[in-house]
Length: 192
Image 1 (cartoon, one colour):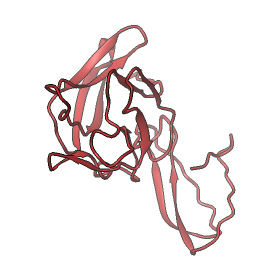
Image 2 (cartoon, helix red, strand yellow; image 1 turned 120 degrees about the vertical axis):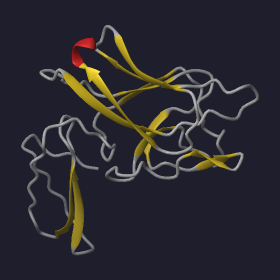
Image 3 (cartoon, rainbow, N blue to C red; image 1 turned 180 degrees about the horizontal axis):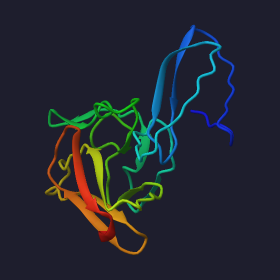
């Protein structure tokens, strides 16, 4: 993962095969992938405006936690099972560019090795400029498992938008999915 200079230029010494793949990303723009670029080529990217982040690169999401474990981390998901069922995903959501996702706890080999315990974990996007739009669609993919432990599971996954003063609730998930689920929310911008 490398960053361009202020003019969008980046130089790298390459060795090995005759072609390579380049992914260009920037917050506020849709990512673009160029495959099988010949060694020595000087590709040019013109990114289309839009808010898309599939976590191929680090575009500035921040994390915070009061929990004792299971912190948000960006990486290739490491699958685990609980009672013979998938607990943590073993791959990124279908249709995403790349193979990285933000997951809570990505260490260990058993479901309880690095799960969220004793508090909250928070993942926050960079600021979004939503005006001049009246309505927006927000599409998110989640994988959620609420199982295990010595007491009745009572965890949840909450999604919200904030203008810095008030929060607008998108959804609260309490039922396990054990799979990637994509959801789209239509939001009136003035409500935020």
